[in-house]
Length: 406
Ligand code: SAJ
Image 1 (cartoon, rainbow, N blue to C red):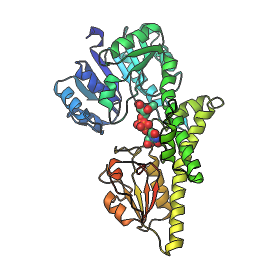
Image 2 (image 1 turned 90 degrees about the vertical axis):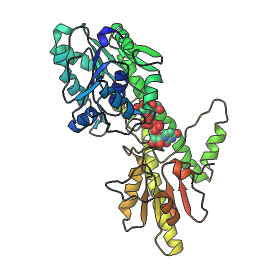
Image 3 (image 1 turned 180 degrees about the horizontal axis):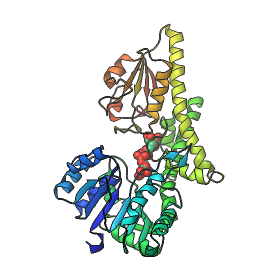
Image 4 (image 1 turned 60 degrees about the vertical axis):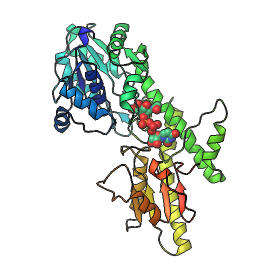
């Protein structure tokens, strides 16, 4: 391993920072991990983890045991600084880069000539250049003497350890020397191709990837509304259309969730509102789909009551933001469940999420019990447990995510 990468400070030990730190440590690079949360720091220093991600546990336990990973609430002098902190919204949909800024300010006093500073956090266009100005305004003597680059990740939760090593990456420096330096750093643990560009293109590339997926899902969701009105099975329609050699439509669902796809497109829309019309519309369509699902459940409840003279029992199947995970962040299913519970909370609604034990707000019911006991079944997430259920003609089944599409 190159001598000048022997010590790395990783700021932010969350869903991306911790796996990246653990992978670096596996490659015998000393990582000083920093997080503002003392409990997170203590957990990691015990060789344990605070997030759910397959294999990560073993990586962290081994890294801590071998002395290659140590967590702290304070940054330490290193050769490389990697910023992996959240970039949430402020106001309506404006990106908030204050965590990136705070993390950068924290390491500015530690920087020395020849160091490499990297941002991995999803960031609006121009953030890396802004941080470059911030660094040089406080340390003018370092101007042109540190390497600064933007290097986004593109891993899929649930498969992070594999994808961190094997996904191609796009790396963009503020100058060609920074790009080169970043590439030689990532070579230490990436087995994939590393593509060089400038910082602005790399920032936009990350946003583009997620905005592109969002727009494609919006197309599928729009089709699902048309098909509902036109009495066409949307799953069959998409399967048939995808037989065309150049058509590849994604799947409709109850909306788009998670902390990336439902968020990142707004970073483009917020800065380029006049130009990013399709990207903004896709966000609206995907958000509207969740609202539409909640309305559909309400309508079915009313129809049932009129027909049977009693209130129906309703099963809300799934709360996670996508199948087979326990992550409820920005979950459209959770939003729909909340909306349905708002209008009625007299024990007729059963909420199911097989991937979590219990929840602070929802009282959870076993999925088989709920399926058996309910009159109306609303499938919000296509978890594998649900796909194994037998279709029951006696029930009103609202299949928003294609559980029974076969
Ligand atoms: N979804 C659909 N229909 C589909 C596919 C997905 O409705 O056909 C929904 C899911 O149910 C979920 C949402 O979209 O609610 C997002 O899920 P996802 O699996 O598409 O993506 P994420 O959010 O888990 O991870 C994405 C990935 N980006 C792309 O695929 C372009 C991942 O590679 C990124 O690293 C990650 O965002 C990130 O961190 O940015």
